[in-house]
Length: 331
Image (tube, rainbow, N blue to C red; front, side):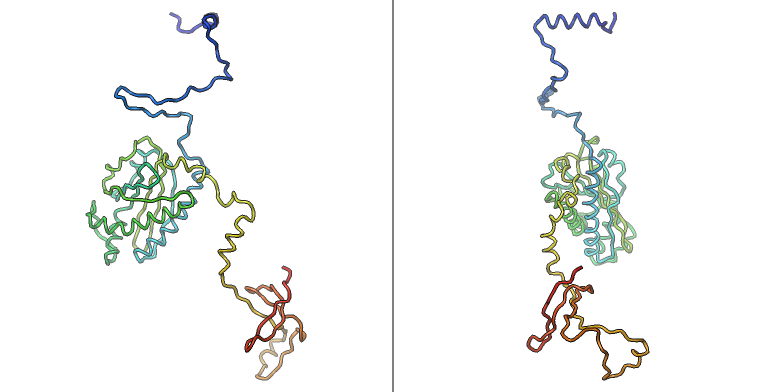
């Protein structure tokens, strides 16, 4: 049997279709069929998947996310250093997207894992910390040196509670770094040290992995955050846009003015100047008079932060000297 139709056979079938009253929709007018939920044999509704819809972050979106988490790294440096009373630096060394199964395979051990509910995200978020670093932090918080020789494979409930004195503020700083885009409120749903228990998402789901590395005098470890792509999807437009570059020139003038309004500046008054030789300078004694290059009554120059800005007239205000601004000098 010939499985490939000839041109004549195709024309015959089309003619039969037209003769039965069917109309062939032109290619330009064809519309995709509406996607409707499908119920399986058990009655459960299977969610439709749009294969034409990308489920990955674009390059600009990744760059936007990197800026936010680099800012979070700076906040984490200050927080960890303050909590542990150590000179500590925390850097965001990687922001990447990958399958959740691949992330689990790359997860180093031993590690402390926290399952978080970050409202308004609907899916859970994972936060991990190196066990060695976290156990040293626990010892440091309890008054020890923080130099731990032997690290246990798991934490007790009491140790977890003490560790959260560091984990909690770190999560606060991460949420603070993202506050411009979304207001997050975190709670710890579960905590454990066994990576096999971290299978909270299907292995094929795309996630955003953020990797922070902390280093201090004797403290070394990493912090990792995993956010499902589905949770970030509604925010992609915000992450992909540079909020400062998108503004019109002068749009931040008012905000900048409020920020610098209370900034202290140094203002001085130059009554005049003179130029003498070094030999004359060395021979000066008390009572000697140096003639200035400014005539009597000529406006004095007023430098602001070392640069001439105004001219004015020197006078007296009660028992103090004062200056009346006469003009603004051209820059």
